[in-house]
Length: 85
Image (cartoon, rainbow, N blue to C red; front, side, top):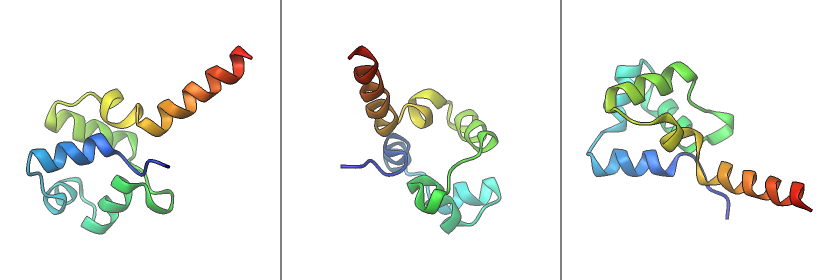
């Protein structure tokens, strides 16, 4: 099963009652474009300055919420397994 988007960040938004519409507006993007980035639809992704903004606003660790997604971890583990052979 392929992981879509940023599940940990999506859960954070839900748990903290952060409305995508409001955060998107603060960042100067439409709600629909923000949602595409959040779910990584059609190659949409957050820019480094957007990640910095989000992490600073909510005091989040970019590695934990954006860079170490389960998809990246599983790809890294499979790469290590291939190297070990």
